[in-house]
Amino acid sequence: MFGENVDEIVRWGWIVLAVLFFLFEIFTAGFVLLCFGIGALGAALVAFLGAGMAWQIVVFIVVTIAAVVLARPFADRISRPGVQPIAGNRMIGKWGVVLQTVDPLEGTGMVRVESERWRAESMENVPLEVGEVVKVVGVDGVRLQVQTADEESRDSDEQVESAA
Picture 1 (cartoon, rainbow, N blue to C red):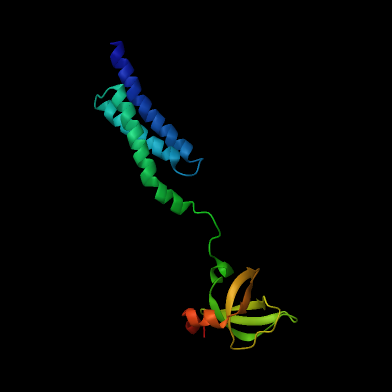
Picture 2: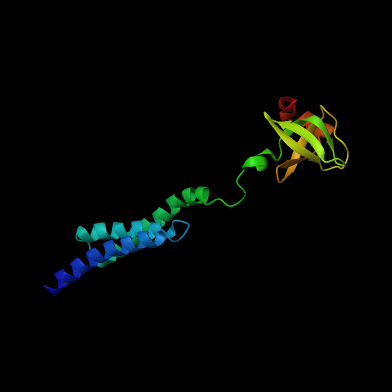
């Protein structure tokens, strides 16, 4: 009689453990506790099917490891560090054309990158004339930081044609 009660407590204990893992996952990152919760559900399943404690622990470990291995690519994709390419940051590395002379002394100038017009400043501290092909190398507030495209990069990069 006592053995049946212990088995019942263990079965429901796995369920409670799984729920706790799921709840604690809300407050953490990386999906690790979620994987432990899935492992606990697997152990609860075999416990309800009548397997012994040794099998429950084996299933818990195996299912948890499998969940971690399967969840890692998803977790890495979601929690990828770094700057998300928004606003001007998405223009870095792209080619553009000078629409209004970029004069570092007067602080004026405008370029077109893709189909958008942007205020620009020269990183070379020399004026960039209308029609010149430039490369975006940085962003300062709402201004793109540009430099002239050297001949080698112009010839090797097909984006220059799309910029002009």
